[in-house]
Amino acid sequence: MIWATANVEAVSDAVVSTENHADPLPLTGERTVPGIAEENYWFRRHEIAYARLLDRCAGRVVLEAGSGEGYGANMIAEVAERVIGLDYDDSAVAHVRARYPRVEMMQGNLADLPLDNDSVDIVVNFQVIEHLWDQAQFLRECLRVLRPGGQLLISTPNRITFSPGRDTPLNPFHTRELNAAELDELLVEAGFQVELMTGVHHGAKLAALDTKWGGSIIDAQIERALAGEPWPAELTADVAAVSTDDFELRTADIDASLDLVAIAVKPQ
Image 1 (cartoon, rainbow, N blue to C red):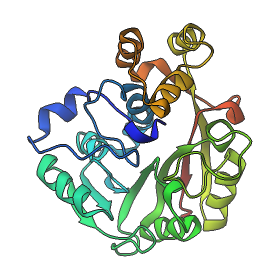
Image 2 (cartoon, rainbow, N blue to C red; image 1 turned 180 degrees about the vertical axis):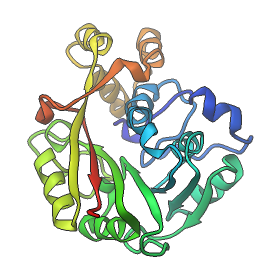
Image 3 (cartoon, rainbow, N blue to C red; image 1 turned 135 degrees about the vertical axis):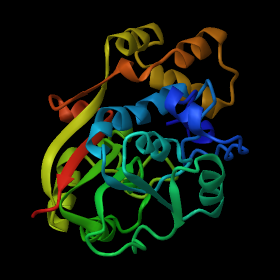
């Protein structure tokens, strides 16, 4: 992730068609905000989890815990019976309420979810758990608010590839990053049954861009952002052209994945 200019470009047609014209959230590096060409790679890399797991939300009552800018909760609102968004940040809460009226936005602490026991069918938590100080408490809260048989859909950067060889995350907004085994262990200890553990990988187009940009399209972006260098027009164009379909979700080579995506179920 490019910390100073973090994540995104254009949102899907479904999001654009239903959003109100609210002022954009400031780009801090902590959350994804739509509409910035140079951040499109990161936006699409986050968006794949929503796109691939959206059918799990169809006709369900869904809580997005840590909804950030709100574009994901609004995507879910296309198919869900009801979507509740939750965020701790004042500006994010106000922004979602103004821009995405289909999302029932609440303000609260993810370590103490302001919902009743057994009150939702699905909890969505994409690219958030790595920011939390008490990850185990958050997962116990997810288990509590889910109905029996309900699902937690969760994604997070893979520590092995995101901060290679480090115990301290490279991203200053992250408190603890996880590998697949560590995420699985946290979920099981919280009381979940892990139905699926999969990972985000570059598809053929992004693999070709890796080769083109000296071995890593990610490093090409980060190096210029950290150095404060202007981007070459060709790099901006390549990044802006990335689509969700340029990423793959697969269970093979999980430790080599970019991000982890898991489905965990509350026992009946």
